[in-house]
Length: 79
Image 1 (cartoon, one colour):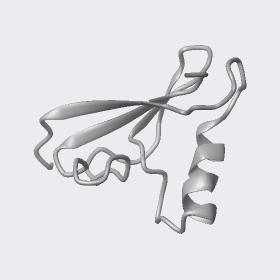
Image 2: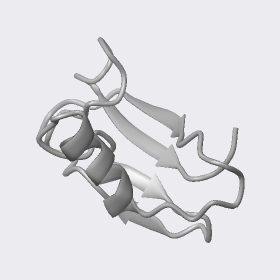
Image 3: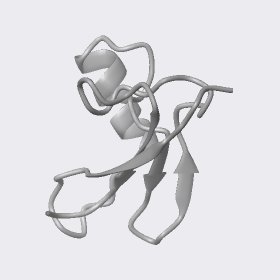
Image 4: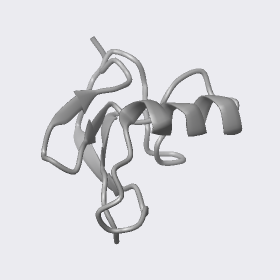
């Protein structure tokens, strides 16, 4: 297991109330950005359900220069 020393929270910056799935975000990251997987480890959906996304044992791709010791969590919703 890798060393984890921080959790970084992100907002999806989508319209308030817009229901976006983890798979939609995965598609943005893989198909549009060319990444190997979704950048976040967890996604908090509109109803509060938490989806597992990228495995924790893998380094995330969510904050340039800060991915090494962190877990990325994205919540769905407006800013």
